[in-house]
Length: 63
Image (cartoon, rainbow, N blue to C red; front, side, top):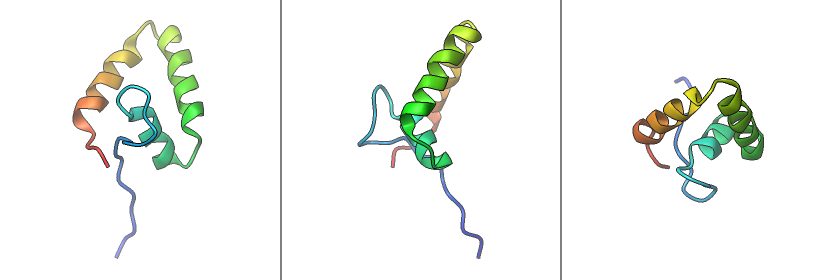
């Protein structure tokens, strides 16, 4: 049987909706790095990541 991970929003390590912490857990990196990349991407892509964040907050289940 294949062993796979599922993407979930964090309940314990959240700032807003737990999306960045969930991505950090999924990718095995520190959630702070994901948050910093999100903030840099927010200013680089003129807010397009905000829409992606909101969609992920609605679609991704909590752990």
